[in-house]
Amino acid sequence: MDYDVSPEVLKLHKQLKPLERPQVRYTVERAVKTADSCWVLVRVAIPYKAIWKKEFYSVDMIFHVPEGMMELGNLSLDSRTHKKKGGSDCGEDSSVDVETRANHIEYIYYSVKFAYDERMEENAEILLIPRLSNERYIFGYEATVLPLYWIDDEEEGLFWSECADLPQEVLLDSSPIKR
Image: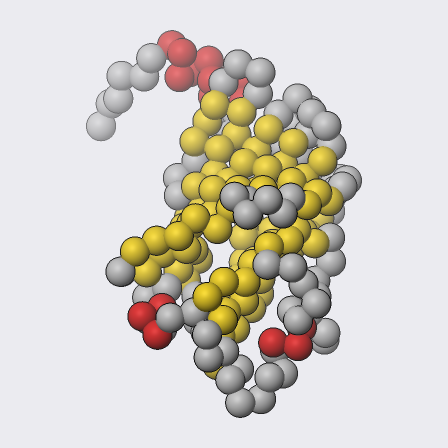
């Protein structure tokens, strides 16, 4: 099938090369629930050359269940200022300085706690909507879905202790999981 591509789109792909470079990847490290609260820890893998100089990468994180959705926050990776920010509406902003180097992947961790409801038991997922931009163009990647498989920690309390000292929403430079 032959598609007619506009010159502006070709120019965008020629300059940004968004699909030819390493991609930022996401993994759910923990999804823990107790009686009325839950904690989700997402590991973000940032490979070398995923974000070039003078570029801005951001992703909207949305918690989704069949009954509705809730915006978790926005993660911004800004190579213009060399600061990585996790922003939210609750006013708790955090930043982590990350330096990537050749043949190496840097990891940061996004931790969020929120109220749990029994309707979240099945088909819960985090929808990620990433964007890459430079001074002139914005490229929207295809949305990614991270399914959540809850660990029920109501009786033992083993996993909940890992996040007890963490704020409601925070961006970390190392994992809080005790191995």
